[in-house]
Image 1 (cartoon, rainbow, N blue to C red):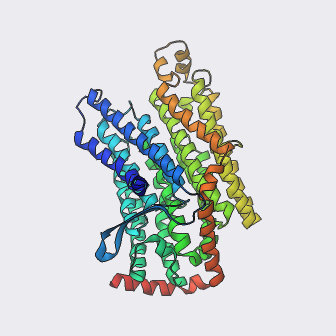
Image 2 (spheres, one colour; image 1 turned 120 degrees about the vertical axis):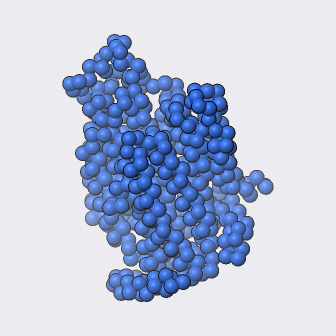
Length: 535
């Protein structure tokens, strides 16, 4: 019983303490030394134990319960009514499972490719894991913000220290974009506290605010979360961060960090500002549709594999925000499921890019073509993840995208039809990538054929090793498992999604939104902003 009462704290602090221990112990100058090997094993052990503990969380989670579970609440700053408060529901539990599942894989992905400061490298991932779990489980808004901001540091270092040629540019751009958005989030949190006297998120969800106040809170929070997802036109930091980050950094960025924005919308904007959410729904849907089409269109024109996958994330996360702001059961469930699916599928694609880059030292499609006869195992799994990315029936992404489209057509046939080109673009750029990498050949690729004959470049194009095969087999298993049997994940979110929709429906029924109210309230918001600044 005592163990379950502190399970969330263990999930948060075990990897953070493990990462801190790796930093204290440090590396030998020789990256191939026994100490470096011990650091890798220790990082994998800590992340694996954390994953197994998250399974305990999943098993002990009551799917029928509406409120928060595994709740912990201890006084932190009593004078300000700030608590170290944790808890999970059906919205956060699947994302914690995704985080703990992905982290051991990213540890394995950098197992023997990171030669520079391996202890610090693996420590950054462990600390990042704990902070991400903290974001998904924090029930105090100030605690949420602390975890939210702290995440930037290890991710910034992963890009800045172990990134590519333009790592300085990419890391600073990533940090500045997300930090600027976070400032607005902090203002919203302080505003909520000055109005209510509490940072406790469940209490803030139950408060009734004026429409103008809700608009201010919604806009401040939405800006922070839209940058993190990222939504058009706030997406420009993402391709640079992905291209310059090490492979494992790209995986954790795409698989988990982008989901913070979607989770923020679900935890803050919808329940705390339901009337503003209803008013802003058409605008958010429009931006989501633009993200879907724009992301797919840009992905179609890329010749760099990593950039292609990065821009595809803009389109895929557009489906997530579309599902969220449809404000119906199918849309919300599809959005949450699509966050999980995107983490698995896009994580797998970035791992595949890292594998081929280690062999050819190029991310250009033209430099990695005609691999079908040379690396059959590699292209098999590449095909699985590409088909999943385009939402092929039987794969995980199909279920999430189908639910979002179902919710879209339920809301409006026009919205549904406008979202369909995004799915067509996904098929176009993924099939193009697959066709060129598996079959297409062109001048200047004789080294591929030399490899099959044992030429000087043969070592570059050997098929998957046991370590690499382990990663992709695990990810492919979940591609098909969720695609064929999504019921366990959908059951987790049933009660929480129903409760969230009930909150929004009740707000809309109690105070129907005047279509002109948002415009009339802008002056009111400005006056209130002056009052906050004066404080």
